[in-house]
Length: 181
Image 1: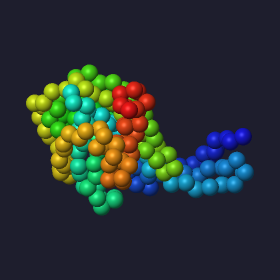
Image 2: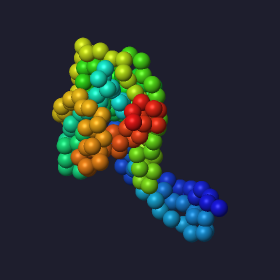
Image 3: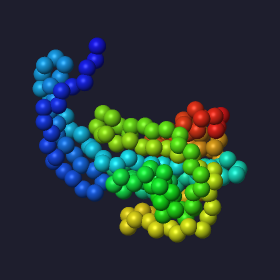
């Protein structure tokens, strides 16, 4: 039977406004001690599957330094402190695209990479929105966005063009919710 490890200690080794890194010591089930490095986030990430009246998905394109590529992504970001995730997605959507969300439907939550981080992402569906909000991007947010037919999006996931985990999980949640086939 698998058991949780017993934490013996934790030390912060790096911290900024987005994350902090800890080196943790554990006692393993076999009674050995083990050191584990974890990237921690104090707030959840959010993403929105914004679908228009033609069932097209809004995708952003943005350069991501860790992978040195321009990636397809959905609008989203990190909650500020204890900000409500739905309020966060409304804020991020307007800041990044100028679209103002009406009704949001929660689809699900996933861990980004539980082998190295406690980071989670909540995915929402929005079909009720309007243009006319105020775009206000962060200093390093240079992006474009466009609407894409869902068959095109699925084909781009299959051919490896779209590899962002939030887009892929968002499609899976849409499928599980019966929103797409």
